[in-house]
Image (tube, rainbow, N blue to C red; front, side):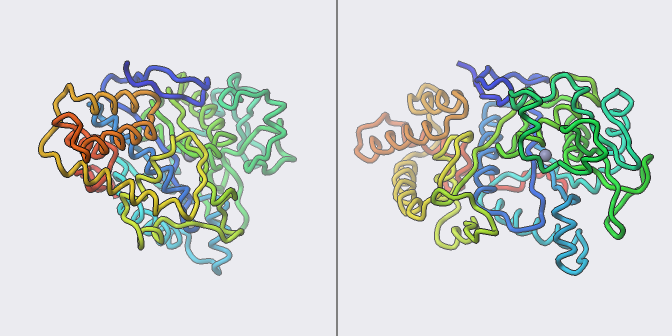
Length: 405
Ligand SMILES: [Zn+2]
């Protein structure tokens, strides 16, 4: 069976095919570096890192782009709250901490790591194309996307426009200027003193979703194979990305597989700074190895909402030790016909089934430690864990050489 992946668009598993044979164009929404990142971010980026590694192991060339949203309402709000501290300073400080965490977690760095503020000309050009193609309109310095003009609007969420319009929408701004309730800003006028750029519509700054469209098309072209991000981005951000890209570049579909990671809660409660219940990966890594965290995070299938509990990691540590002890018994590579290797591939090919893969590696480890497995099971365990990005098993480190600083 070839690799099958679930796409949120259509809600089904389909055999994976790429636009260009042998090349995966992959875009994952990055963070807005206005604040600390928590274990939920680590869950997302470790999952997509593992998918990327698996595709590389399958022989694909993977071009992985992950953005930095360094101009938006949150960045401006934090800058004001810190007495007008430059946004670039806030961005660089938080981004350095975030990247350091991901490096420790052995997450491969993106092929390209673009910043929104470095793509203002592309954002303006994309906005201009959307207006030209009939889906955008300007009202007194603000440019909106007119959702009703894009026939496929709402398809990713699979509900009617009426239902979508009732949902909470962080892009609800300047309502009095909009033609329809789901219209969203591509370009916006700024308050005095806020960062701004010159544009055909006057001084202003980008809307939120247009930033990702400009960055993905600049670095991956108009059509991509995998788009990743948290399930909280399905509406409106990703619905908007589809509308913008397909309207601006007239290539359908914009993306072959929409992959959304589940949300991570803490003992049943959403993690949030205001509740003071953030669990930070870097704090956990003071007590546990990064590989322990990776094992914990990959024990949940990417789409599933997970619930972190304080007693999770001690149990993971024991599990990890068994896998490590079994895998160090092997030397060299497993044979192509090794049944553990074959079962690992089957589990991963079935919609990136990391929990199933880890379970079967556990069982194989028990056999190795009991001396009842195949002769090269230990090698197969180590190779599989290496593919999943475990540093102890020889997985490649974060700096991959083609990273653009
Ligand atoms: Zn995005």
